[in-house]
Image (cartoon, rainbow, N blue to C red; front, side):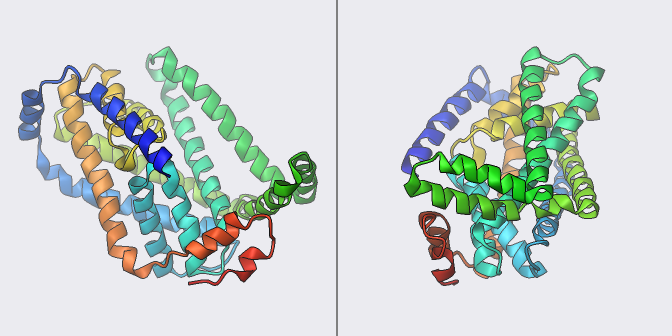
Length: 337
């Protein structure tokens, strides 16, 4: 944990330096003063709506594993989203599986599988949006080259998940043979974890639910693009909707980098990088990045803090699921808090 935090701080510090390099702070302050802050309320409402949509979508992905009432679902989701922005190196991604396990009958590992499904579908929709605008404007070769492998990996992961559900027995036999090649002291635990992880992929075999989840995912990313579009116009930066999608994708690539808590540095640098593709001056881009980051992260943290008293965090469940991987009975012995 300490090594992850230190590495994240170093990465964030380097990117923050690159963000501030060559920028006159008086120009940034001038941009702050010139911004139209009347649009902020609309942005706040959309950000909250996006968090609600993400929670509902996760509830649908979880539904084959068990029913989760709305209050625990929202409280776990909001606290989990807060953990993603509050913990270094993307470690917060583990928070929702741990929390939902403590607040329902769903195990940590199957819940982790649902988070993996969620992330794969997010990436797939983002890549589809990216390639839908690719031919409408000239883009740097580095951006295109970095997106193609990401799309390929996403499609492979989605196909693998589908195969694991549709041909579950064959997939498990293949995984068993792979696990047999591992040292005996870890092969049993890895095999058990993979068996339970696959349980989280079940929603992929329900085509009606899957279509609904994809439509919700598209709406979520359209709303995220709308947030950027409204804020850009508040700062007098008139980009087209297609340009906004490119900026959003560059930003998402940036915050996927494991960095310090709060995405400090990587959020700002990749905002500047994305806006720079369309000739936006660095001072204007940095001003936008600071406000966009403050609102996006601040609202997520505020929602998480409001829901924190309603969530139960089970460290014993985490130890049983992962620390006791070699003992298949460990999870059953672990008490739920």
